[in-house]
Amino acid sequence: MSNVKYPRLQQLIDGVKTQQKLGVVYPLSAPSLETVALITQHRLCVPILIGPQQKILQLAQQKQIQLDGVEIVDTADDPIVAAKKSVELVRSGICSALMKGSLHTEELMGPVVSRDGLRTQNRISHLFIFDIATYPKLLGISDCVVNITPDVEQKKHILRNSLDALAKLKIKSAKVAIVAATEVINPAMQATIDAKELVEHHRTNPIFPNAMIEGPFGFDNAISSLSAKTKGIASNVSGDPDLILVPDLQVGNILYKALVYLGGAECAGVVLGASVPIILTSRSDSVFSRIASTALAMQLANPS
Image (tube, rainbow, N blue to C red; front, side, top):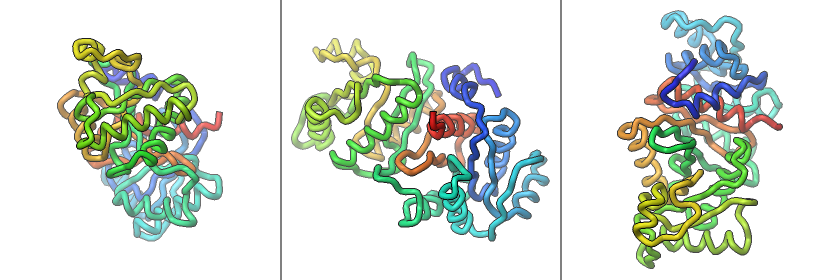
């Protein structure tokens, strides 16, 4: 698969070829199986399908999707049973990452975050990596999916997770812009207060080594150094962030959809903070986005 429209994500995809195993949970939809076929064709990793074998094979035959040689771990026709089995496969060391198939997010994440699941000492969060034609490099945005209204302490965890992921992508000294509706600290706007506290905390007790964290920014002066200069903002991050920390899920989710549907961007996304990366696909995701998310997850799962 080659996509010249999104060269940075394509480069990520091209750089991944591994024998690590990806558990695809309850893949009873054509996009899920098409993604598996492409993963196999391009040898990104080794997919294992987890769900009712007969129904999976029937769907593949109906949609004329080749699954030759793809292992299927047969389960009852119940998404929660499949999700629990996927957790077992991770805990036993068989799967290095998981991908959501055609089950609800809570049906997968319930077993993941349970006492016998895949929790670590880290908070669960989500990271998108965007390829945007009008931006000169990949741009991370967090958290658009998992944490609804994170407080300052939770935002520290979100930052650590995201910066650790960027470091594994060889972005070692990441620049972080903490965004709000305005760059002015306003006691009536909690996002600006949180940003100030995070920046001050990072100065005295670094949240992540070598990261440069600044804020609050309005989105305009986070992305545009000209906008920042016009407003008299002196910043080493403005115009060049590697990561945008959004104030809450509503802002992040709207920004994500605006970039994709209005801005023509494409993205890869992954859940962080569990013992393995987890890909939460959406029914509206393109196959290319699913493949890019797979490449991202397998890159992060790579112990080297």
